View (tube, rainbow, N blue to C red):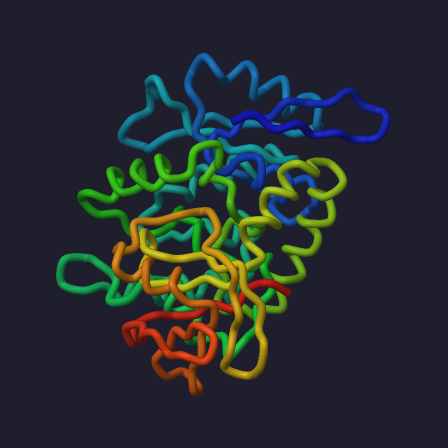
Length: 304
């Protein structure tokens, strides 16, 4: 999809989706991300160069050390400081190197991500989804929608069949660009991380002024409670906290996922969720309990 950036006194600029690039670019222009990583097709490189020139940014094409001649898709680093781009490119594929700090991620979040990534099972699969780790570090909520990373599928360990799941989820959400559904392009250490929230605030403030259509899309998708099982199974609820441990809802909202139909039907058949602490979530319809969700269900109370 294409997005439009508008700055006072300048003609509008078109920005291609290129994955999460529109959000990453907002973070860069807000001073949050000194370096942005983006993949483009070879024939699209001149368009990226023109955009960077209009915004006063530099770009550097790079790649794996064992593949010095990039082919159809190019890896590009974008930022204001050419030397910083070069330093980041040299460290990008270095063994045991996490470029998160060079990309502007909070140190606490980089450390938390490294600990999660290193805590893998015997086949190299993390023992828990990174969303669950973030939730465990967060306290009861509610949480700021700007730190909602449920739909941020980058930097998550990928396995066979996940690309097909991603295509199926995209088919369930026509017209919605799943790649840009985030305000911070990293996984926060917690949903109350002060440094992530500060950086999210700077990005969000600029986005509202320069890319209001993108900001509106993010607000309407991120600012709702989410029932979560894993990256491909979740339900977004048009809901509000009614009391401690109780949420009233009127609908299931996009983005839609591959959650089992039986679970989705149970939730759609109710209008209220109740729980005692972090115990199982019960689904109610009026004054009648209609069912109980599996114990592993998380309710991520985004919205503030």
